[in-house]
Image (cartoon, chains in turn orange, purple):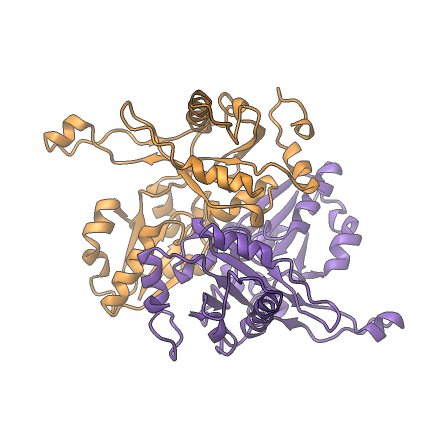
Length: 281
Length: 281
């Protein structure tokens, strides 16, 4: 059996009791290490689970999956995913490949950022399409995701922006020279995301378009959701450029315009100190 | 401290390790018993947690919350919610009231149907606004939620339909006579939801409107998501009227039209036996 097990969002103890029992009895346990991270590292998980973990980066999962599936028809193999296993498309692909090999699978769900964002008080059913915000480079500055934000906002829906994670990336020089030297991991902050968004807004104005999102749009920055030191800050997009949310992972919500009074009241618990009262936004 | 603890979706062991530790040390533990249910009852939870649970129905939570908050500034009180605490608006309200009383709170997240539906292979970020489908009566047959389904589908987004739950309801006669006698709980099935939806489609045709959803629209029925005996069936809305998904809870997804090839391939794992191949829908 192949078990896909969600680890939740905080630390080692956010695994479910069922998940932990399975991890402790599997013959091999993989830790998916490229779509998200917990607030603790592999060693802390190994100590708590009492098991050695095999790190599975993108290359292992997408190109060497046969190693993961080896003997999984007769032994139990666990594949651990931060959040819930269905947060990222790559895990559907793993299930399809297992099914083709005749390997049965079972999923043990957990919280993911897709539902835990509810902690800021915005109502989950009012979220539209989720978007990903990637690190811009000098030559690659995609703006197309903004159309989805616009559509959501026009429909009164909130947009959850998942912020870029770069792990095990090679510099161009190391890539060309075939040197397997990796850059330190990078996690986009709410500040960086907000700055990129503001630049898009300014570009739209320069093209004569009327931006649906402006410097004054009410946003929510979230950091380390589900961990004891999680931080939430509600304020304008402009304020999101400077708010200090601390360590990764960060996420950003662009609100859908009109809020329910209960949403307003919840957000006011988290309004950035220097901000006017949320109700005035 | 007031702890809001998600129980996940299946049975007693779907609580997180962190959640279980808190439950075992709290001075009072409430079980919210009206927005959702697990596949096991209160007694099974009490046995596994090793704690007595106080059932909290809608009346207790909305009108007698002071009992829940009593001494919560100096003692630890746990409030258990099936799924994740932020699935239902009523729990935001509980947080706001606690905050006003100066009671600190902490949330321990878990899987909810809002993210676990990903198990059918439809991509989570492609879901639009979630809707609730309520039991129709002879005199109350609301259709307005269908506008949201329509808007989602026009934007290429899937719609998760949460199906009605009736617990601790009184018959009109018992209500009038002030008798606290309650009807047996009712949980809407995918069959019942699909039949109501088809009636709406027929009403739209009768009014000369062109329905965005028809008998042939690709849907996904889900039952007991997260439990070992979960069932998923992909087929037309017409087929959803007769597919047998077994015991509650059920949910229904109306797909957004164009699917990603990976979504198609995942859904074909669950196509209803008598159906033509999903790819032909």
